[in-house]
Image 1: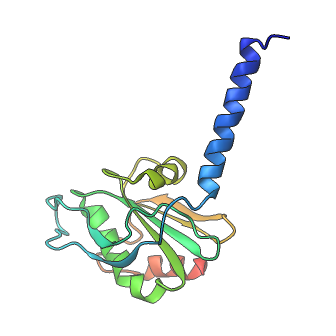
Image 2: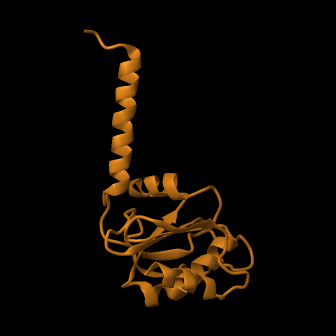
Length: 164
């Protein structure tokens, strides 16, 4: 019996869906982002900062931890809202670095491992923070700053505390 085009289309769709699901579930990259710090010469008053606001090691990581909650930060250079939220995240990082996995996504140059995270958790506005618990449940997934004043980490701290 010769397969028809509808059968082939359905089969291809199923295979593509399975591959995408496996890519989301698998840890497709190396070690998590560490040693997070602010990039030098950031502006917190305008969009003049040409560099991504967070520096660190293993920033190409795109995996969600199976044993820890994961915090995903989406942002870009030339955005003062991103810079201010990055400042909050980096300020709290030392307190949570051993309890949470941090994934930092520069939307202008995401790694291949981060593209599935962008498709799943990024909704088109920066900055965006997504927090996923260790069972894969989304606890938070919103765009915008977590506070209205620079340096106010209270809301972000409550969010990170709830993820542990």
